[in-house]
Image (cartoon, rainbow, N blue to C red; front, side, top):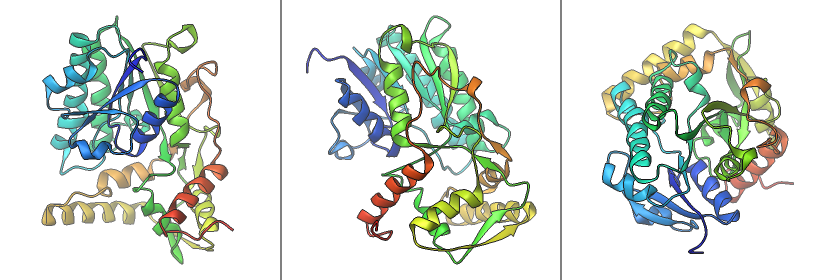
Length: 322
């Protein structure tokens, strides 16, 4: 495998990262992953390298000799805007600077979030947009980079998705009032396939210098009721939906932020996340997607839910498929 091309990956031990590492390894890549603790890479077909996004020297070691660099690492919850920016913006810039110094010919896939499309909604969304801009500025116009903005990612290994499981498993399920927000979805294996396709060399895999959204084939997205009903059916539940006014959802976000400050424990839900949930259009369009010659989604929501429920069942968190 010493002659195999090298891909350097940040965030390779996370939910999406493990799918990306597996996809790259399956295509013959030698993979090096940045880890804070080497034990975190157990079971991965990858070489661990100790460090984090604040360690410029470690980032240079990570990307040295790499033909492709995949940036997945980032914060999804933090104590405030400064903490989000320190990782999602400054860490992204630091990695890009390392690429310029140690791997200037590498193909760079910067995996952001669809939230970056609406940076005014939350500190998280603002930090993801800032991270895109900082990384692209550091790589420069001559760099071979592409930004991916996946929609809501789900699939086996997603522990944050267990929050939706608990919601769908409830007798009464709160949902936003009409007009119902639309949320595009994408399976983690499809995102991993998109990343792996962009890492390959060749004329079909070089839409460099662009920002692309990554969703399943239903680009316009799904309503909350449809999403939760699909999950509930797999959990053998028949939930009743309770419409929640926007003001109540926002008030719950303010309360969650207050509790986080009081306890010192950051959570996924707060005012910013409430604003994201209430945003009416998290759909996409064909003009925002990767060229079909490069990548196209293969996993629909129904199949993806079955796949996810089977993983939950393996953990004893859902009924076994019948």
